[in-house]
Amino acid sequence: MAQLSETFLYQAKVYVTLRPSVLDPAGTAVRAGLSHMGYDNVSKVRIGKYIELELTAESEALAQQQLDKICDQLLANPVIENYRIEVFTAAVA
Image 1 (cartoon, helix red, strand yellow):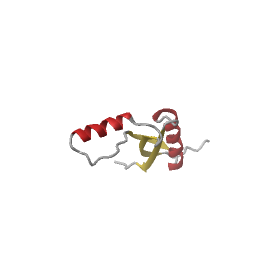
Image 2 (cartoon, rainbow, N blue to C red):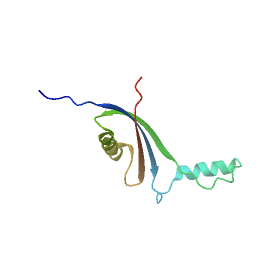
Image 3 (cartoon, rainbow, N blue to C red):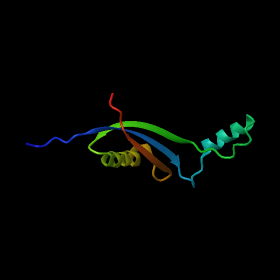
Image 4 (cartoon, helix red, strand yellow):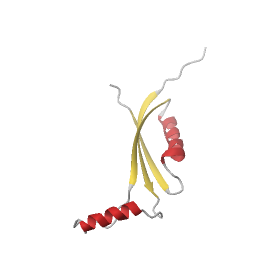
């Protein structure tokens, strides 16, 4: 008889940002807007994405591996973007 493996619920926060060498026209527009509003002390703005996910996996390492694939295949463009993942064990209600 096959043994069932236990799975755990994980929450992940994914931060996607443009690589430093990539121009950020949205960030430039926001910085210009802030300057027009009188915030002349803001010298640089970079725009990114923040994504929250919940997933089940047999271990945190496997959850991390799956999240890396998700980021590479869908959430980030690895040619122009970097990403950072934070994984937490989900609190059981």
